[in-house]
Amino acid sequence: LLQIGGIFPLTGVLAEFGEPSQKGAELAIKDLTEAGFQVEMTSRDSGSDPTESVTAASQLVSEKNAQVILTASGSETIPVAEQVTIPNQVLQISYAAVSPTVSVLPADDGHDLLFRTNVPGTAQGIVLAKTAIDKGYKKLAILYVDDALGQGTSQIFTDNFENWGGQVVAAVKHSTQVQTTYVDELTQAAVDGAEALIVISFPQHIIVFLQEAMAGQFFENFLFIMAQQTETVTNAMGSMLEGVCGTAPAVVFTDSLEKFNVRYQAEYGTLSSPIAGNAYDAVVVSTLAAYVVQAKSETLTPITIRDQLREVAGAPGERVESQIDELKRARELLQAGKPINYNGAYTDVDLDEKGDVSAPIDVWCIKNGQMVTENTFMPNNFEVVGQAGMFFDGTKDFVRSQESPLGNLVADVMLAGAKASDNTVAASFINAGSLRNSIGEGEVTHSELLMVLPLLEI
Image (cartoon, rainbow, N blue to C red; front, side):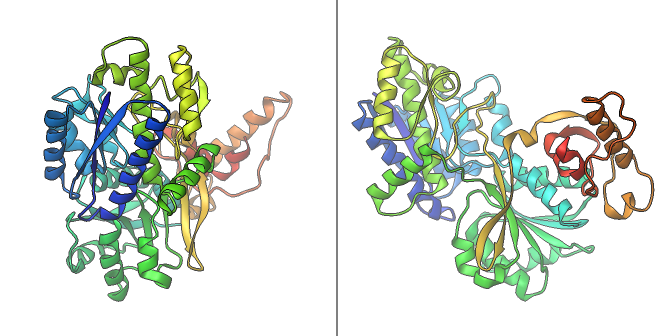
Protein backbone atom coordinates (compact mmCIF):
# COMPACT_ATOMS: atom_id res chain seq x y z
CA LEU A 1 0.00 0.00 0.00
CA LEU A 2 1.46 3.33 -1.09
CA GLN A 3 1.24 6.03 1.57
CA ILE A 4 1.17 9.62 0.31
CA GLY A 5 1.29 12.69 2.51
CA GLY A 6 -0.42 15.71 0.97
CA ILE A 7 0.39 19.21 2.24
CA PHE A 8 -2.01 21.88 0.98
CA PRO A 9 -2.29 25.65 1.71
CA LEU A 10 -5.88 25.52 2.93
CA THR A 11 -5.42 28.71 4.97
CA GLY A 12 -3.17 31.75 4.69
CA VAL A 13 -2.14 33.86 1.72
CA LEU A 14 -2.23 30.93 -0.73
CA ALA A 15 -5.59 29.60 0.45
CA GLU A 16 -7.31 30.13 -2.90
CA PHE A 17 -4.98 27.45 -4.32
CA GLY A 18 -5.35 25.03 -1.41
CA GLU A 19 -8.84 23.67 -1.96
CA PRO A 20 -8.52 22.96 -5.71
CA SER A 21 -5.13 21.30 -5.25
CA GLN A 22 -6.45 19.08 -2.46
CA LYS A 23 -9.51 18.22 -4.54
CA GLY A 24 -7.30 17.31 -7.49
CA ALA A 25 -5.17 15.00 -5.35
CA GLU A 26 -8.21 13.41 -3.70
CA LEU A 27 -9.80 12.82 -7.09
CA ALA A 28 -6.65 11.01 -8.19
CA ILE A 29 -6.83 8.78 -5.10
CA LYS A 30 -10.46 7.98 -5.88
CA ASP A 31 -9.78 7.24 -9.57
CA LEU A 32 -6.72 5.12 -8.83
CA THR A 33 -8.56 3.12 -6.18
CA GLU A 34 -11.41 2.43 -8.59
CA ALA A 35 -8.83 1.40 -11.18
CA GLY A 36 -7.43 -1.23 -8.81
CA PHE A 37 -4.39 0.52 -7.32
CA GLN A 38 -3.67 0.46 -3.59
CA VAL A 39 -2.91 3.97 -2.40
CA GLU A 40 -3.89 6.19 0.52
CA MET A 41 -3.33 9.87 1.22
CA THR A 42 -3.27 11.76 4.50
CA SER A 43 -3.67 15.53 4.15
CA ARG A 44 -2.36 18.41 6.23
CA ASP A 45 -2.83 22.19 6.04
CA SER A 46 0.39 24.15 5.53
CA GLY A 47 -1.18 27.47 6.51
CA SER A 48 0.81 28.89 3.56
CA ASP A 49 3.71 28.88 6.02
CA PRO A 50 7.15 27.23 5.62
CA THR A 51 7.44 26.32 9.31
CA GLU A 52 3.99 24.73 9.41
CA SER A 53 4.83 22.86 6.19
CA VAL A 54 7.96 21.38 7.76
CA THR A 55 6.00 20.34 10.86
CA ALA A 56 3.29 18.74 8.72
CA ALA A 57 5.83 16.87 6.60
CA SER A 58 7.67 15.60 9.68
CA GLN A 59 4.43 14.25 11.13
CA LEU A 60 3.43 12.59 7.87
CA VAL A 61 6.80 10.85 7.57
CA SER A 62 7.15 9.79 11.22
CA GLU A 63 3.52 9.01 12.09
CA LYS A 64 2.02 7.91 8.76
CA ASN A 65 5.17 6.44 7.16
CA ALA A 66 4.54 8.52 4.06
CA GLN A 67 6.72 7.40 1.16
CA VAL A 68 5.77 10.38 -1.01
CA ILE A 69 5.20 13.95 0.19
CA LEU A 70 3.27 16.47 -1.93
CA THR A 71 4.00 20.18 -1.43
CA ALA A 72 2.79 23.49 -2.82
CA SER A 73 4.81 26.68 -3.33
CA GLY A 74 8.58 26.97 -3.44
CA SER A 75 8.68 28.68 -0.04
CA GLU A 76 7.13 25.51 1.41
CA THR A 77 8.74 22.97 -0.91
CA ILE A 78 12.35 24.00 -0.31
CA PRO A 79 12.44 23.86 3.53
CA VAL A 80 10.48 20.58 3.50
CA ALA A 81 13.05 19.12 1.11
CA GLU A 82 16.01 20.44 3.09
CA GLN A 83 14.75 19.53 6.54
CA VAL A 84 12.49 16.51 6.10
CA THR A 85 12.28 14.55 2.86
CA ILE A 86 15.89 14.50 1.70
CA PRO A 87 17.41 13.78 5.16
CA ASN A 88 14.87 10.95 5.56
CA GLN A 89 15.25 9.73 1.95
CA VAL A 90 11.58 10.33 1.16
CA LEU A 91 10.33 11.18 -2.33
CA GLN A 92 8.86 14.69 -2.70
CA ILE A 93 6.74 16.03 -5.56
CA SER A 94 5.56 19.63 -5.72
CA TYR A 95 2.43 20.52 -7.64
CA ALA A 96 2.90 24.31 -7.41
CA ALA A 97 6.54 25.31 -6.76
CA VAL A 98 7.46 27.87 -9.43
CA SER A 99 10.81 28.91 -7.92
CA PRO A 100 13.80 28.26 -10.23
CA THR A 101 15.77 27.19 -7.13
CA VAL A 102 13.82 23.92 -6.91
CA SER A 103 15.50 22.72 -10.11
CA VAL A 104 19.00 23.09 -8.67
CA LEU A 105 18.51 22.79 -4.92
CA PRO A 106 21.93 21.99 -3.41
CA ALA A 107 20.39 19.73 -0.76
CA ASP A 108 19.08 17.43 -3.52
CA ASP A 109 22.42 17.15 -5.30
CA GLY A 110 23.21 13.45 -5.62
CA HIS A 111 19.84 12.39 -4.20
CA ASP A 112 17.30 13.04 -6.99
CA LEU A 113 14.37 13.05 -4.58
CA LEU A 114 12.74 16.38 -5.51
CA PHE A 115 10.34 16.61 -8.47
CA ARG A 116 7.46 18.82 -9.60
CA THR A 117 4.49 18.47 -11.93
CA ASN A 118 4.03 22.21 -12.53
CA VAL A 119 6.10 24.37 -14.88
CA PRO A 120 9.11 26.16 -13.30
CA GLY A 121 9.29 29.95 -13.36
CA THR A 122 12.59 30.05 -15.26
CA ALA A 123 10.89 30.08 -18.64
CA GLN A 124 8.43 32.76 -17.51
CA GLY A 125 11.26 35.04 -16.42
CA ILE A 126 12.89 34.69 -19.82
CA VAL A 127 9.64 35.20 -21.75
CA LEU A 128 8.64 38.28 -19.75
CA ALA A 129 12.09 39.79 -20.30
CA LYS A 130 11.62 39.21 -24.05
CA THR A 131 8.15 40.72 -23.90
CA ALA A 132 9.44 43.82 -22.09
CA ILE A 133 12.16 44.32 -24.69
CA ASP A 134 9.66 43.77 -27.51
CA LYS A 135 7.37 46.44 -26.04
CA GLY A 136 10.23 48.92 -26.08
CA TYR A 137 10.91 49.23 -22.36
CA LYS A 138 14.45 50.27 -21.44
CA LYS A 139 14.13 50.92 -17.69
CA LEU A 140 12.01 48.79 -15.37
CA ALA A 141 11.44 48.26 -11.65
CA ILE A 142 10.51 44.98 -9.97
CA LEU A 143 8.25 44.41 -6.96
CA TYR A 144 8.50 40.81 -5.80
CA VAL A 145 7.36 38.62 -2.92
CA ASP A 146 10.27 37.79 -0.62
CA ASP A 147 10.23 34.03 -1.01
CA ALA A 148 11.79 31.43 -3.28
CA LEU A 149 9.41 32.31 -6.15
CA GLY A 150 10.07 36.04 -6.01
CA GLN A 151 13.80 35.87 -5.39
CA GLY A 152 14.57 33.31 -8.09
CA THR A 153 12.25 34.59 -10.80
CA SER A 154 13.25 38.22 -10.20
CA GLN A 155 16.88 37.27 -10.77
CA ILE A 156 16.06 35.32 -13.94
CA PHE A 157 14.14 38.30 -15.32
CA THR A 158 16.89 40.76 -14.41
CA ASP A 159 19.67 38.66 -15.93
CA ASN A 160 17.85 38.30 -19.25
CA PHE A 161 16.41 41.83 -19.48
CA GLU A 162 19.80 43.42 -18.82
CA ASN A 163 21.57 40.94 -21.10
CA TRP A 164 19.38 42.23 -23.93
CA GLY A 165 20.14 45.87 -23.23
CA GLY A 166 17.52 46.85 -20.64
CA GLN A 167 18.11 48.14 -17.12
CA VAL A 168 16.41 47.15 -13.87
CA VAL A 169 16.59 50.36 -11.83
CA ALA A 170 15.09 48.90 -8.65
CA ALA A 171 14.21 45.44 -7.33
CA VAL A 172 12.08 45.81 -4.22
CA LYS A 173 10.89 42.90 -2.09
CA HIS A 174 7.79 42.71 0.09
CA SER A 175 6.76 40.38 2.90
CA THR A 176 4.95 37.13 2.25
CA GLN A 177 2.29 38.38 4.68
CA VAL A 178 -0.41 40.57 3.14
CA GLN A 179 0.09 44.19 4.19
CA THR A 180 -2.47 46.97 4.44
CA THR A 181 -0.27 49.28 2.38
CA TYR A 182 2.72 49.03 0.04
CA VAL A 183 3.40 52.74 -0.39
CA ASP A 184 6.95 52.44 0.98
CA GLU A 185 7.80 49.64 -1.45
CA LEU A 186 6.22 51.49 -4.38
CA THR A 187 8.16 54.64 -3.50
CA GLN A 188 11.40 52.64 -3.55
CA ALA A 189 10.50 51.13 -6.92
CA ALA A 190 9.39 54.33 -8.69
CA VAL A 191 12.89 55.74 -9.25
CA ASP A 192 15.33 56.61 -12.04
CA GLY A 193 12.76 56.81 -14.79
CA ALA A 194 11.26 53.32 -14.40
CA GLU A 195 8.79 52.96 -17.29
CA ALA A 196 6.84 50.02 -15.88
CA LEU A 197 6.60 47.76 -12.84
CA ILE A 198 7.34 44.04 -13.06
CA VAL A 199 5.04 42.23 -10.62
CA ILE A 200 6.12 38.86 -9.18
CA SER A 201 3.69 38.15 -6.37
CA PHE A 202 0.47 36.44 -5.32
CA PRO A 203 -3.10 37.67 -5.90
CA GLN A 204 -3.81 38.83 -2.33
CA HIS A 205 -0.72 41.06 -2.37
CA ILE A 206 -1.31 42.32 -5.89
CA ILE A 207 -4.86 43.47 -5.22
CA VAL A 208 -3.60 45.84 -2.51
CA PHE A 209 -0.47 47.32 -4.07
CA LEU A 210 -1.77 47.56 -7.63
CA GLN A 211 -4.60 49.86 -6.56
CA GLU A 212 -2.12 51.98 -4.61
CA ALA A 213 0.29 52.08 -7.55
CA MET A 214 -2.43 53.39 -9.84
CA ALA A 215 -4.12 55.74 -7.39
CA GLY A 216 -0.79 57.24 -6.31
CA GLN A 217 0.45 57.44 -9.90
CA PHE A 218 3.58 55.49 -9.02
CA PHE A 219 3.25 53.49 -12.26
CA GLU A 220 0.96 53.38 -15.27
CA ASN A 221 2.36 50.25 -16.92
CA PHE A 222 2.64 46.76 -15.46
CA LEU A 223 3.92 43.34 -16.49
CA PHE A 224 3.08 40.24 -14.44
CA ILE A 225 4.62 36.85 -13.82
CA MET A 226 1.87 34.54 -12.59
CA ALA A 227 2.45 31.21 -10.90
CA GLN A 228 -1.00 30.08 -12.02
CA GLN A 229 -3.63 31.66 -14.21
CA THR A 230 -6.21 33.08 -11.81
CA GLU A 231 -9.19 35.40 -12.10
CA THR A 232 -8.87 36.72 -8.54
CA VAL A 233 -6.96 39.85 -9.54
CA THR A 234 -9.04 40.59 -12.65
CA ASN A 235 -12.28 40.16 -10.71
CA ALA A 236 -11.09 42.51 -7.96
CA MET A 237 -9.55 45.18 -10.18
CA GLY A 238 -11.98 45.20 -13.10
CA SER A 239 -11.39 47.79 -15.82
CA MET A 240 -8.31 49.15 -14.01
CA LEU A 241 -6.33 46.26 -15.49
CA GLU A 242 -7.10 47.11 -19.11
CA GLY A 243 -3.91 46.79 -21.15
CA VAL A 244 -1.90 44.99 -18.47
CA CYS A 245 0.16 42.06 -19.80
CA GLY A 246 2.05 39.14 -18.31
CA THR A 247 3.05 35.51 -18.58
CA ALA A 248 1.63 32.23 -17.30
CA PRO A 249 1.97 28.55 -18.21
CA ALA A 250 -0.18 27.85 -21.25
CA VAL A 251 -3.18 25.60 -20.98
CA VAL A 252 -2.81 23.11 -23.84
CA PHE A 253 -6.14 21.47 -24.64
CA THR A 254 -5.50 17.76 -25.03
CA ASP A 255 -7.70 14.67 -24.80
CA SER A 256 -6.22 14.02 -21.37
CA LEU A 257 -7.14 17.51 -20.17
CA GLU A 258 -10.66 17.22 -21.56
CA LYS A 259 -11.16 13.91 -19.76
CA PHE A 260 -9.85 15.38 -16.53
CA ASN A 261 -12.09 18.45 -16.81
CA VAL A 262 -15.19 16.31 -17.35
CA ARG A 263 -14.27 14.05 -14.43
CA TYR A 264 -13.47 16.97 -12.09
CA GLN A 265 -16.68 18.84 -12.86
CA ALA A 266 -18.75 15.69 -12.44
CA GLU A 267 -17.18 15.09 -9.02
CA TYR A 268 -17.16 18.63 -7.63
CA GLY A 269 -19.58 20.64 -9.76
CA THR A 270 -16.94 23.27 -10.55
CA LEU A 271 -14.38 23.86 -13.27
CA SER A 272 -10.90 22.48 -12.79
CA SER A 273 -7.72 24.57 -12.66
CA PRO A 274 -4.06 23.96 -13.51
CA ILE A 275 -3.10 23.49 -9.87
CA ALA A 276 -5.81 20.85 -9.45
CA GLY A 277 -4.51 19.01 -12.50
CA ASN A 278 -0.91 19.24 -11.32
CA ALA A 279 -1.84 17.78 -7.93
CA TYR A 280 -3.81 15.01 -9.65
CA ASP A 281 -0.81 14.18 -11.83
CA ALA A 282 1.58 14.12 -8.85
CA VAL A 283 -0.54 11.45 -7.17
CA VAL A 284 -1.04 9.43 -10.35
CA VAL A 285 2.57 9.36 -11.50
CA SER A 286 3.87 8.36 -8.06
CA THR A 287 1.25 5.60 -7.80
CA LEU A 288 2.06 4.27 -11.27
CA ALA A 289 5.75 4.21 -10.36
CA ALA A 290 4.97 2.36 -7.13
CA TYR A 291 2.95 -0.21 -9.05
CA VAL A 292 5.92 -0.94 -11.33
CA VAL A 293 8.02 -1.65 -8.24
CA GLN A 294 5.40 -4.06 -6.92
CA ALA A 295 4.92 -5.71 -10.33
CA LYS A 296 8.64 -6.46 -10.33
CA SER A 297 8.33 -7.96 -6.82
CA GLU A 298 10.75 -5.37 -5.45
CA THR A 299 10.55 -3.76 -2.02
CA LEU A 300 8.40 -0.63 -2.08
CA THR A 301 10.50 2.29 -0.80
CA PRO A 302 10.75 5.98 -1.73
CA ILE A 303 13.96 5.18 -3.60
CA THR A 304 12.50 2.33 -5.67
CA ILE A 305 9.48 4.52 -6.46
CA ARG A 306 11.81 7.34 -7.50
CA ASP A 307 13.68 4.99 -9.81
CA GLN A 308 10.49 4.29 -11.79
CA LEU A 309 9.05 7.80 -11.79
CA ARG A 310 10.48 8.88 -15.15
CA GLU A 311 9.81 5.46 -16.67
CA VAL A 312 6.01 5.68 -16.39
CA ALA A 313 5.65 9.20 -17.81
CA GLY A 314 7.85 9.44 -20.85
CA ALA A 315 8.63 7.85 -24.19
CA PRO A 316 8.79 5.08 -25.13
CA GLY A 317 5.60 3.58 -23.84
CA GLU A 318 1.93 3.30 -24.63
CA ARG A 319 0.10 6.57 -24.07
CA VAL A 320 -2.18 6.62 -21.03
CA GLU A 321 -4.41 9.55 -20.05
CA SER A 322 -6.16 10.90 -16.96
CA GLN A 323 -9.33 8.81 -16.76
CA ILE A 324 -10.41 5.80 -14.71
CA ASP A 325 -10.60 3.45 -17.70
CA GLU A 326 -7.19 4.67 -18.85
CA LEU A 327 -5.71 4.04 -15.41
CA LYS A 328 -7.16 0.52 -15.44
CA ARG A 329 -5.46 -0.03 -18.79
CA ALA A 330 -2.22 1.33 -17.36
CA ARG A 331 -2.34 -1.21 -14.53
CA GLU A 332 -2.91 -4.05 -16.97
CA LEU A 333 -0.02 -2.93 -19.16
CA LEU A 334 2.34 -2.58 -16.21
CA GLN A 335 1.30 -5.96 -14.82
CA ALA A 336 2.20 -7.46 -18.20
CA GLY A 337 5.60 -5.78 -18.06
CA LYS A 338 4.84 -3.31 -20.84
CA PRO A 339 6.01 0.33 -20.72
CA ILE A 340 3.53 3.20 -20.45
CA ASN A 341 3.71 6.94 -21.06
CA TYR A 342 1.30 8.75 -18.74
CA ASN A 343 0.15 12.06 -20.21
CA GLY A 344 -1.16 14.24 -17.45
CA ALA A 345 -4.06 16.63 -17.22
CA TYR A 346 -2.16 19.90 -17.71
CA THR A 347 1.34 18.74 -18.75
CA ASP A 348 2.76 15.57 -20.28
CA VAL A 349 4.67 14.94 -16.99
CA ASP A 350 7.86 14.10 -18.89
CA LEU A 351 10.25 14.62 -15.97
CA ASP A 352 13.70 15.78 -17.04
CA GLU A 353 17.04 15.22 -15.30
CA LYS A 354 16.22 18.04 -12.86
CA GLY A 355 12.83 16.58 -12.00
CA ASP A 356 11.00 19.30 -13.94
CA VAL A 357 8.26 19.27 -16.55
CA SER A 358 7.99 21.72 -19.42
CA ALA A 359 5.06 23.36 -21.18
CA PRO A 360 4.43 26.35 -23.44
CA ILE A 361 4.37 29.81 -21.87
CA ASP A 362 1.62 32.27 -22.79
CA VAL A 363 2.03 36.03 -23.04
CA TRP A 364 -1.41 37.38 -22.09
CA CYS A 365 -2.95 40.83 -21.99
CA ILE A 366 -6.22 42.20 -20.61
CA LYS A 367 -8.34 43.41 -23.52
CA ASN A 368 -11.95 44.53 -23.09
CA GLY A 369 -11.91 43.01 -19.63
CA GLN A 370 -10.79 39.58 -20.82
CA MET A 371 -7.44 37.83 -20.51
CA VAL A 372 -6.39 37.02 -24.08
CA THR A 373 -3.27 35.26 -25.33
CA GLU A 374 -1.00 37.43 -27.48
CA ASN A 375 1.81 34.96 -28.01
CA THR A 376 2.89 31.47 -26.99
CA PHE A 377 6.45 30.27 -26.58
CA MET A 378 7.15 26.56 -26.91
CA PRO A 379 9.51 24.71 -24.53
CA ASN A 380 12.25 24.35 -27.15
CA ASN A 381 12.40 28.16 -27.35
CA PHE A 382 14.59 28.04 -24.25
CA GLU A 383 17.15 25.58 -25.56
CA VAL A 384 20.67 26.98 -25.81
CA VAL A 385 21.70 26.79 -29.47
CA GLY A 386 24.98 28.70 -29.44
CA GLN A 387 27.22 31.37 -27.95
CA ALA A 388 27.50 35.09 -28.72
CA GLY A 389 30.89 36.70 -28.15
CA MET A 390 29.38 40.17 -27.88
CA PHE A 391 26.13 42.06 -27.35
CA PHE A 392 24.26 42.41 -30.66
CA ASP A 393 22.24 45.61 -30.26
CA GLY A 394 18.90 45.32 -32.05
CA THR A 395 17.23 48.48 -30.77
CA LYS A 396 15.49 50.52 -33.44
CA ASP A 397 17.46 53.72 -32.89
CA PHE A 398 20.74 51.86 -33.30
CA VAL A 399 20.13 49.49 -36.22
CA ARG A 400 18.28 52.06 -38.35
CA SER A 401 20.95 54.74 -38.08
CA GLN A 402 24.11 52.79 -38.96
CA GLU A 403 25.60 49.54 -40.08
CA SER A 404 25.32 47.18 -37.13
CA PRO A 405 26.83 43.84 -36.11
CA LEU A 406 23.34 42.38 -35.76
CA GLY A 407 22.37 43.57 -39.23
CA ASN A 408 25.49 41.98 -40.65
CA LEU A 409 24.80 38.77 -38.76
CA VAL A 410 21.25 38.58 -40.12
CA ALA A 411 22.49 39.25 -43.66
CA ASP A 412 25.04 36.44 -43.31
CA VAL A 413 22.37 34.06 -42.01
CA MET A 414 20.02 34.96 -44.87
CA LEU A 415 22.77 34.29 -47.38
CA ALA A 416 23.73 31.01 -45.73
CA GLY A 417 20.10 29.92 -45.76
CA ALA A 418 19.79 30.68 -49.46
CA LYS A 419 23.10 28.99 -50.30
CA ALA A 420 21.90 25.83 -48.60
CA SER A 421 19.48 25.33 -51.49
CA ASP A 422 21.40 27.13 -54.27
CA ASN A 423 25.14 27.61 -53.89
CA THR A 424 25.25 30.17 -56.73
CA VAL A 425 23.27 32.78 -54.77
CA ALA A 426 25.29 35.95 -54.12
CA ALA A 427 22.77 37.93 -52.05
CA SER A 428 19.53 37.06 -50.27
CA PHE A 429 16.55 39.03 -48.97
CA ILE A 430 14.42 36.39 -47.32
CA ASN A 431 12.32 38.54 -45.01
CA ALA A 432 11.67 42.25 -45.39
CA GLY A 433 10.76 42.71 -41.72
CA SER A 434 12.79 45.00 -39.48
CA LEU A 435 15.05 43.90 -36.64
CA ARG A 436 13.10 43.99 -33.41
CA ASN A 437 15.26 42.40 -30.73
CA SER A 438 18.82 42.23 -29.44
CA ILE A 439 20.93 39.12 -28.84
CA GLY A 440 22.76 39.16 -25.52
CA GLU A 441 26.37 38.17 -24.96
CA GLY A 442 26.92 34.59 -23.82
CA GLU A 443 24.50 31.70 -24.31
CA VAL A 444 22.02 32.17 -27.16
CA THR A 445 18.63 30.51 -26.91
CA HIS A 446 16.24 29.52 -29.66
CA SER A 447 13.82 32.20 -28.45
CA GLU A 448 16.41 34.93 -28.97
CA LEU A 449 16.74 33.94 -32.60
CA LEU A 450 12.98 33.74 -33.05
CA MET A 451 12.58 37.24 -31.64
CA VAL A 452 14.92 38.69 -34.27
CA LEU A 453 12.22 38.92 -36.93
CA PRO A 454 14.18 38.30 -40.16
CA LEU A 455 15.54 35.06 -38.72
CA LEU A 456 12.03 33.75 -38.18
CA GLU A 457 11.71 32.12 -41.59
CA ILE A 458 15.22 30.66 -41.83
